[in-house]
Image (cartoon, rainbow, N blue to C red; front, top):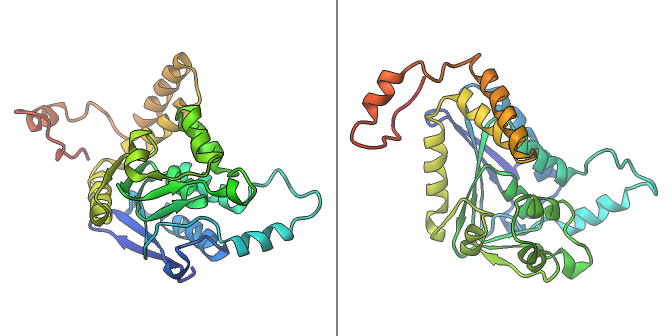
Length: 268
């Protein structure tokens, strides 16, 4: 694994922290980062001591997008008719995270552009600095934001806001990203990493089978009509019950919730 990607396994919290570490280039993605990030995911994929993956970045920005020198060399290597059936590296990175069996959390600060924006949106939970700058500057250099466009549209934000991002090349603040539903919530810049770790640690206390099946249900349901999504939920629940009985600790749960909701209750 490249030194541009750092992996810290926090077994007490059941959280693996992946840190993008190319601050001198504002964490612009090159082959080392793209491949190293996927290697880090693979390293903890089957690790039962890890339930949540947290992505953060060193330096003043989360990620300034793709390294354009790397991208130019990468494009130059294409054959006249290239293998269209094989996703390119940035898309594979986002899809690897979207389809990852563990829950993912992102801590986003500074600039988060292009490929960095795509990676941000691939996470299940996004904690963003309220003054972060998030956008798609590709149109300014003659592109339309390949891969990023698909994720922006699939998030269901209003079309006219998508145009603001894609065709005008204007950035959103972290607060605006939260208001549009592109981030879970925003916090002051100095609190991003701590808040993201706090959320990741809380998720790490949940039953791993429940976390996994909740993510399966969300990923399936978002592509289905309501009635089909209801049937899908039924099938996912049947699969989940093979590993945990949702009603197996009714008394303990009810006792823990007396006096109001208690999120500290843990189901084994």
